[in-house]
Amino acid sequence: MKVLFIGDIIGNPGRKAVRELLNGLIDRNNLDLVIANGENAAGGFGITPDIAEELFGLGINVITTGNHIWDKKEIIPYIPKQKMLLRPANYPPGVPGFGSAVVSAPSGETLGVINVNGRVFMDALLDCPFRGVDAELEKMKGKTKAVFVDIHAEATSEKMTMGWYLDGRVSAVVGTHTHVQTADERILPKGTAFISDAGMTGPLDSVIGIDKTQAVGKFLTQMPRKFDIPGKDIELNGVILDIDAESGLSKSITRVKVKLNA
Image (cartoon, rainbow, N blue to C red; front, side, top):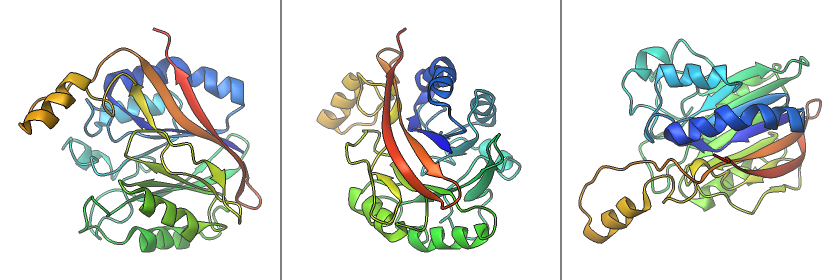
């Protein structure tokens, strides 16, 4: 089973990259399923119901998120109705939405998807992401052997620790949130694919997706300011996983960096 994960989609430029590049990636790589992190898809902060539906319509099967999931308030009544739009599983009990999903490929093979949020340098009040993954895996018993985990976290150490913690128990642990694709992709000793960060889908000529001049001004003055997303030099980042659906382990992980020629 071949699965594409698309790194954090940033605003309209990121959605444009998905619109124009995804079909070609699916065809060239014989992809079975597509997952994407969409928590920055609405203007760089959050996601709306309309944008979620747009991304599903483009061929994305499951959307993961992170710490910006609640930035657009209209998502709150929508998320309990859409089981393929995930919010981090380690939010406290009673929070609307789902932390995991099981999706079927056209071949009939299944893949579990789990979304958790890190706590180091982020929201330390969230529940433990490691125990959160364990709870979601327990729910999936008997439903699928292949499981993909998006750990949305700031600290590389926390992401790596999650990889080692789950090695041999899931198909892949892929980091998101920092928007810079790392070069540490590998298959861990017990068969779990890992990368610290899949990167972002948005403008490369920027500071993690925002206008570089505005970012420089923010750091120099420490004053609040509006952030814009540049519309040029757009790139789709992510990884392609080749997963053995029977064992649930990965055979390969390959980084994806595709320029939008527009």
